[in-house]
Image 1 (cartoon, rainbow, N blue to C red):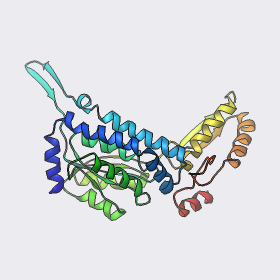
Image 2 (cartoon, rainbow, N blue to C red):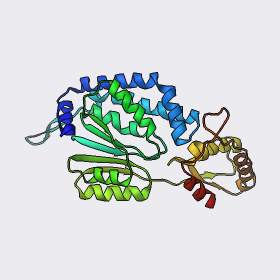
Image 3 (cartoon, one colour):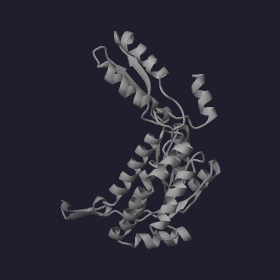
Image 4 (cartoon, rainbow, N blue to C red):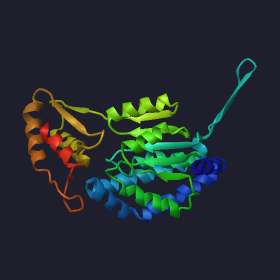
Length: 288
């Protein structure tokens, strides 16, 4: 009931007024930038440079969402067929939710949250149970921004919390980012409940190194891709495929550079890669 009431109030608020909350949120995120970035490093393990880059991308999404008065415009077409005019308008759905992964505790939630608010929806976020702290801080800032009660909600938990969101009749749409098996599960269960659903699963990326490639530049780019965020991202270059003579030059260079990678605590200077998210992840990777 609280969510429904919040949605009715927000849906009837003009978009030019809704985005004022986002302007305030954007400024608050800038004011607390280093504190949130440090929290990302402490709970997700990535280096402080990676955490700052992630948060910057998240803030950029808040900035883009402030353009919703233009982005959400519909259209009119007169006489699209004989005696027929066409009109398209965009309206909020109601209550929507996002279930997000551990690898980008701030950026991925901000792919969804600002746009949902700007479009007039109430929004529920279920962060990964492995990284609950970053969004606690962001939601505290949203309170400071003055969002009305019931517009945003933070739900912590594991599978039980996920299933509750998927099955709840008042939640109209679900967005998910995470592993492919979980994406399939969420898509099937949400679709059966009649919800709109979008699921982004995992990825496996191959990089082909040709014999005439600039080996030094290729090595730098592949190292950054493969080891950024400890390889825990869908854009990671998981497999390098050197072709022909490149096997004799690139492969030894890659092995030497990987062995020299500085691994450690993400807040320490000069560390190039932080830990993976759990001991179980480390054991699985080592087992490969």
